[in-house]
Image (cartoon, rainbow, N blue to C red; front, top):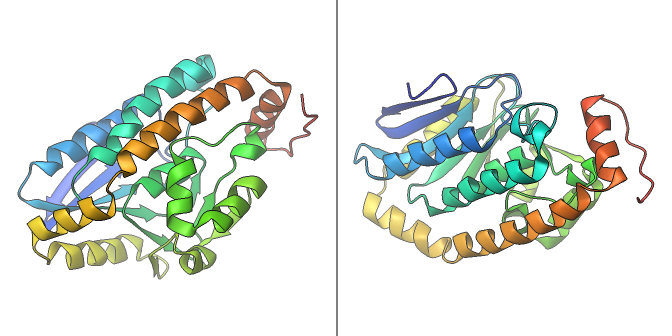
Length: 256
């Protein structure tokens, strides 16, 4: 146990890295920092060949909580701190599989997209809802989402903010495996075991080649995303979008 909010369990070459902020697993720079630090420690652990990133509760991750904590106090400062740590996820050398139940929303989608592979269920929902909140996408999604699903599918998701269910996610390759109900962890571990059964030095080398330049592109994207978000967070539309989300109602945007 690393903390009440994050745990690590290593067995048979696979590390289960579990977020514990149920039910929605909202993150901030502290939780993302703990994930980064744990993953980098696992990089140097010969007993770990693959990381499964999972979470406790109904949902994988609902991104930042704009109604509480550091994001409620100051969006810009909280995002600056968060993105500094989030960028380090792309420096991790060990393959990461995200086990995604419930919703992966906004920054939670970005966290899932930082992984190499994603395992979902039919009931899983991937949502790029930034526009519905009145601001530009973040968490490197500008790079990672088009990289995974292609430019057109990413454009669809980002401009509409609609929910993409597990079966559609599988067709788009946003999900790489679709687990039967109740078997998400089992399916994710089975996929991890397949990878762990290959030569570890070769796996890391193959992965590094496939992800060459990704960390640098994500860091550049994070700078641009934050600059755009700073502008939008000062608008009436962003205030309306966030208030509507917290109030569980449809937003009414005016373009102001």
